[in-house]
Image 1 (tube, rainbow, N blue to C red):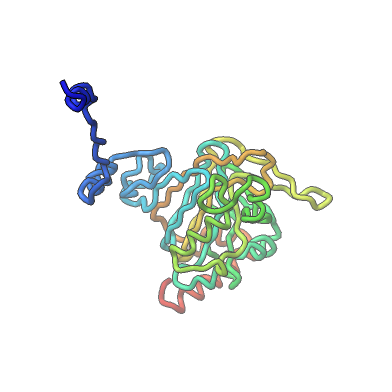
Image 2 (cartoon, rainbow, N blue to C red):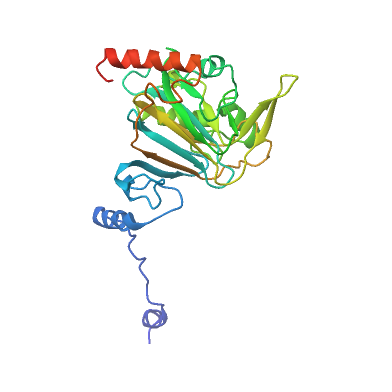
Length: 295
């Protein structure tokens, strides 16, 4: 036997690598379609009417938004006037940072300073109205089982998260709230200049007698807050740790989001008449909507 023949006889059979599941356009298409049934802990329910547990007394077909938002993520939606938006702290570690813009005129947007000073109350809760800088109501808080919220501190920034966690970019493991708001804004035709200070829910802050802000944290899993849209609004949500959260690790749990059709606050409703300031804000809103033929 020649050396060549011997080498041929003893050589191991060649093994060709198997084609990648995405090596061709057709394989990539089939691979992508195979993911259609995949479910994860944090994702939107499509259609929203298929959510497994609509609020008591709400028909499934009236649900217009159902989603679980993981910590370090964001979401957004345009909601019609009268829609009720329920946020739920599913783990006790969620922190829902919220911005609101009028859907058809985004220059009218949430004004946290007026929201606090007009009602002589810095602490958000049931009955509080979220105001624009036009003195009109964007949304009202209709229910609250948490009581741990913040209208003073705003959300986290790129610089702060980079200094604290090593990174704060939107694609990092520790994204800042403002960076996520920028992405949500872009998807609604808005720019960073359209992002005012935000409010947040489920991680509380109180002001001490000496004027310092004290972080009070969460009441635990299951806390909810329900907002009613009093105009058509663009909702931007970022679920990120509160800037004053003292824990060294980037800690933020899942946030439940569910919205359903309802009715806006009307004259004669207890909320409309609850305070002189609130009544004036509702009248300003009604006057504006009436002039536009909306209400």
